Image (cartoon, rainbow, N blue to C red; front, side, top):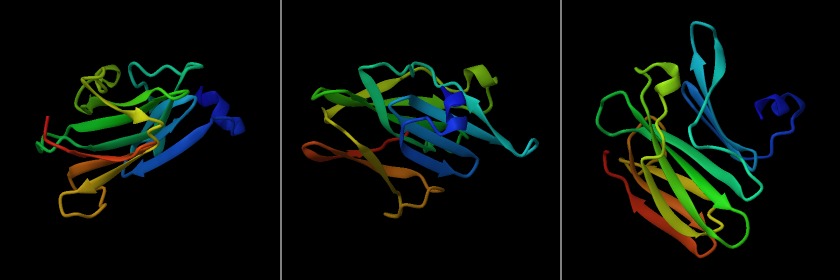
Length: 154
């Protein structure tokens, strides 16, 4: 999949860049690239359970602190089946202290959303959009308007 990016062939709808990471989402899947300062480069880290199909695409991808000051992060990936079917937010944990193949967990929580969910906005604890702060609410835009979810540490 990522080889197609060399020829600009990935079909992306969301690109998120945070210090040390890049998250991409689209009809070809959801991708996480982690920065290595030692190599001054980004490398692809496999996200378990992400498999592009003819029936599913991914429309957004966020990463934020766990809220527990433990160095762990939470991934939120917005899954959007094609057609007028319900969407879902998939939650995974990211623990950089583990071996690379174990850093990203399988889905530990899933929240159903109305059809055609398209975008996630993360509101931070100080009511800003500062990516360095913890998240207090997720706002998801979809066919019926928006859903606001309060975030609690996991």
